[in-house]
Image 1 (cartoon, rainbow, N blue to C red):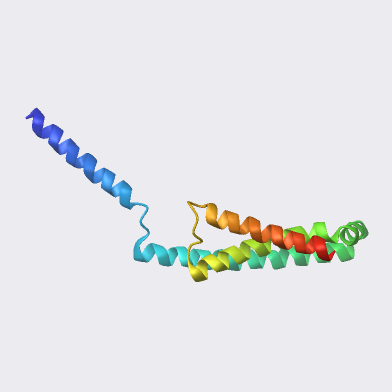
Image 2 (image 1 turned 90 degrees about the vertical axis):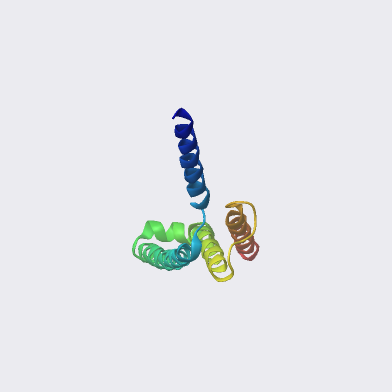
Length: 128
C-alpha cells in the first residue's frame, strides 16, 4: 500500500514537472499574442512620443522660462528622450518584423537598444 502511494506521488511530480517545463512554450497562439502585444506597444510608444513632444513644444512656446531652457539645452531636453524613444521603437519594430534578436535570454533587445541609443546620441553630439 505504501509503495503505491510513493509511485502515484512520483507520477504526479513527473506530470507537474512536465507542465512547468512546457509552460515556457508559447505555442501557436502565444506567438500571435506576443506579436499583437509588440505592435500595440509600438503604437502606444509612438502616441506617447507625439503627445509628450507636442506638450513640451507647447509649454516651451507659451512659458518664457521653459523657452530659455528649451533653446539653450535643446539637445538634452528633446534629443536624449527622442533618442531613447527612437531606439526602443527600432528594437520593437525589428524584433516584430524579423523575430527575436539572438543573444542569451533578454540581453539581445537590451544590447540592441543600448547600441541604437548610443549611436543616436553620438550622432546628436557630432552634429550639434
